[in-house]
Image (cartoon, rainbow, N blue to C red):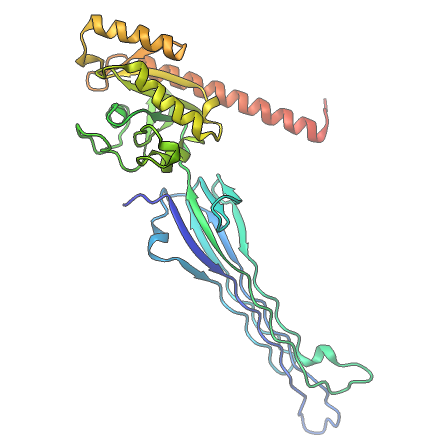
Length: 349
């Protein structure tokens, strides 16, 4: 299935049905009076978060979604039926934005969440509604109101516990393939990975989701390369795993390039916990490897892991540290939610 993380769609709610002008015509009823029913309400347009989806590919082939119109009112005071709703089913992690692409309407992060995108028009009043003591035979009815319509953007941001970032060809896809059952495309040229990939890492009795993000280059936050479009997928990650190619000439400079892009992009990426690792360590001599490790540690100001996805060297230690950081972030998030709940409701024993 092709990965699609952004789509622009048009939604139109149903128009309300028109009211009816009708009078009673039964035999032997001299002054029957009006009996025109009201029109039915137009259908709404909803977005619903469902499980089993991980792409917006469905909206590549259909961009227009319209709810059904309400049925017109009829005689004998019969109200028209309401129009059927239109439901856009989207994967977990979908953001819904206005046509400007910046104003967020909703952020759907849990299965079952629903948001109203366009409200259907009300049905018009039939002539029964207008009868009075001075107007015994009204001959007018209201048309139904038009339903709302708008263009919206759907933007998918993958929900993963940890995200792999780095320059192109830093070994991110190989890392993902070695620790999960995912099968990303792997080759020896830059930008092999064109779409984000997800995999589930099992470590003892715990599991976490790992995301492979296409490589970043200098200027990615301004649109250079393809990384700027996919940086949004690491916004929801609790920890970033920064892989630096140990076979590179200047590992400190490689680190600075990606770090600068994360800081320039913003959206909280600069504040996320980061683990730095030198990848492809099996392809570098031990003396050179230690020198590069010390230089990278001075640049990033933290310990640097040495890993090789091909041989498995250092992988379990790094995965254990990733899991530790994820659990710490979860505890901090729960504590923050508890504090916010306490501030809203007040302390209770």
